[in-house]
Image (cartoon, rainbow, N blue to C red):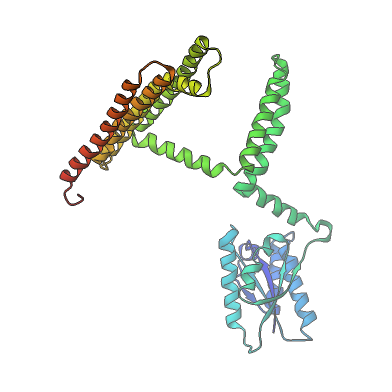
Length: 359
């Protein structure tokens, strides 16, 4: 058995004529077409309904044919597809036949054809017949395609943002010429467009969104680390500059230092500032863990480890530069090792006594 399905995805038939759908039967569909043509002669769904009747009459001589009209909802989208699927199920349940049912889908353009997969999941489709006015064969398809592009956030952002930047270049250049900055705005606009293309091409939007969310959470939850990390970053920058300054001092004293001396000079000038950055960030992290109720005594090892490592690196760089003797270096290395071991043992003992079940 062949079922001719006339599809009206946005429910023009129901809204403009008040008819209940689905409409099943040749005479009923023809009456519905006349009612819709009377209500709105310019509606393209009128052609769909009459084409369904035409196909019924042409194919009825060869096999048993039924024609029906199904509609969606005015808003379209998923809700309209679901409504069409429900009406197709209702039609199939009401057909009195033991033969396999096949369908021909009749539409007026690409928008209505988006429901074809829904119909195919319920009945075998032999073909899709698109009915359009000959003078405007591709008008609705073009309109629907443009509408879909503008409604899709990803496509809209990919196409319209670069287009908007390009359209702004000319008026901004004219404005720049008026104030005596002919090349500045053009260069900035080109740079913005280039950065956007790289950003989209490398797929960095998810990473940036995640970073922004984390930063927002840190601000809203009042974490101390947001301050300590900023201070630590400043201390690291100062340490780097101090390392370069000390290297220049060493080069003034010895114009051609070897690689070990260069590394030692950079380290000697920067290590104290790096240590301050490590202490600041670790203390901020410990504070946040305590306020969040996740504090563990072994977290207090971090500042002592920073101090021990700083003492060792400072002594090593000073020894390479000739500022300290070998016995003093050995003393500092031993003291740093003892400090780290003692702090580890001490806080492990305290934690085991405070939490005997975990010890």
